[in-house]
Amino acid sequence: MKDVRPTARPIAEMLLAALVVASFGWLLWAFFTRGYLPQPFLVDTNDTFMDWFNTAYWSNNEGAYDVWRTVYPPLSFTFLKLFSLPGCYINSPFQGRDCDWFGQLAILASYAISVVLAWVAFRRADPRTAAVRGITFALGLPMLFALERGNLILPCMAFFVIAHGDIVRSPRWRAFAAAMTINFKPYLLLPVLALGLKRDWRALELAGIATLAIYLVTYALVGAGSPIEIVDNMRNWVVTFVGGNVWEQIYYSTTYASLLPIWSTPIPILAYLPSRTVEAIMWGVPILIRTSQALALLCLLGAWLQPRALPIGRVSALLLAVSLASQSPGGYTQAFLIFLVFLEPWRRPGPIIAIIAAYLLSISADWIISPFPDMVSRSWLSGQPVIGHFGMAIGQFVRPGLILLILWALALDSLWLIWRAHRDHAPSLGLAIAPNHEGALAA
Image: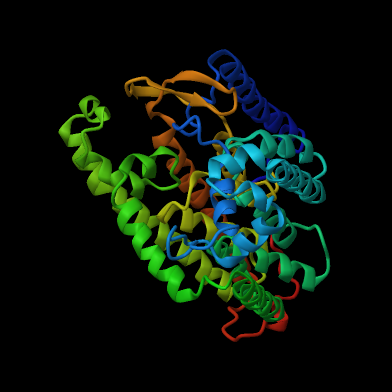
């Protein structure tokens, strides 16, 4: 497996980044001509920033867990209590959005800080590609989608970059940052578990203690959000949201599992596919997902046996990729995976394919193949009535495939690195790293 020539790396990535920038240019053109952000952005053109301001409303009013039935840990409400103007949330989240200039500023600041920190991490990983990867990360669909929604992955991303990028050297600061990511988004526990597979027990212990401490402090401040409440609300969310609204599940998904219920709905795309194709999809998608999960588990087992074979960022990426390929916590969560992939060197087919897929996931455009009836609504961003054009689109079928492509590309490359390590070093079965692994190379 030979490396691609170094001169080919920046040229190829410049071309890929140019596609992302061009899609961003098209997005701006579409907004200024139509008055709203087109698909793949949200259908409800009046709902901009509402992930932030809905949560901010309940951070300033009682009932987040027993009335709103949220699944957010208490940190989200503690954070938004600090970065909101309480007087704006007397009546509704929509009034809060129009009134709370501090919250709007916090959204933009969170986005800017996350982007700058990501660029610093890319620069330390590879100065030659830092600019194109940084621009792509900033203007790519996942981060722009999170910005439009005002989702809390924006402040969470800053801590994620500190925890998983080469930003700080202090183990305590990295542990604190990892703990913040878990308390913002509990599924981000998975990338942190890479520390255990690498036998870095001290770092894992620090992260665990910090996670528990932050949870207890924020739980005391909020006065609600016990594990029992969150689990109970999660069950309610699965029943009312996941099981009841197929369209919202498939609109911007990370997994093909979300697409399976579509075949039992009257969505017009079914008119374009023969019954045999539908049956093949229903039969093949579960097998593909299970096979991908098995491949990832095989890599993780190999990483345990050869803890020096893979860099920790690779193990974190595998853990996150298999999670996103199995269930979708939201399309903007791809930003975390893209960040980890962009820390990979442009070297060997596996990482190169994963990097290309990450660029393609960043394209902010879509092609509607089965339009729905046009919807008349108001666009909050433009402040005018608009006629929205949305429907089933190519991206809804391609993006989960790109997630799987990243998983398979990194997993197969990881197996090769693990096999190479096995040639020189015996497997490590204990809890500590064996001395003969100290000289093993991860790349």
